[in-house]
Image 1: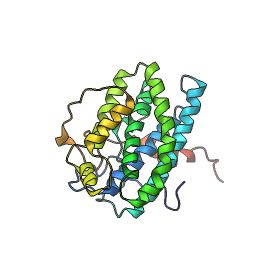
Image 2: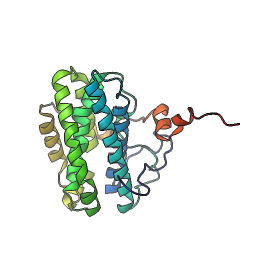
Image 3: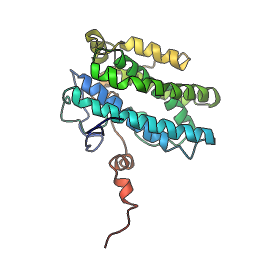
Image 4: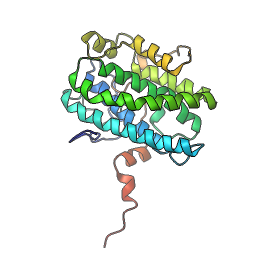
Length: 254
């Protein structure tokens, strides 16, 4: 999927450039969605030989490929949306949950059930908005995301993942942002079909469980990176994303 320049833009250190942006563009939101999709796909793929069953191994690999492919389409759409909001384009704008590899299957389940669904409802908001390049390019993703949703719901019933789900729920709400911020502005302009309140409701309905509203200190919200805590992806993840890890396995020349 995608065309020329449909890969992630060049990156610096993931924590550089973290700061608040008062007036965020749709470019910033779509870039964050692409960053999260790329990292989620990679985290899924890391479990493709470590899941509890062969069926889950295969699902992890398939969903990983889906999300990495989706990220390429999203990155490829950025050039149609203008330019970055500031000099920190090189920083990944992802939820903290994806900063590092997961060490427990319950983390996979929570990401699949909650975060994947959060990104899907945002995709739906974009597809039903008035930005034609997004309406036309992202529609197919929603069909592929349905399997992710069904897989996550199924494992939620089996795995004891309450702690991980609570963390993922909180970070999903932070990623949507506070009421009255950029998402609600895009809704008023027709660029998004849903407001922050709509997205929260849709996510809860999709997960099928009610969660208490976490106490989020929105004064700490970094609008450019859509999170309230500092930090970023670790060096191992950054190396993998930049293709440096593969070079270790190349035969020595000479």
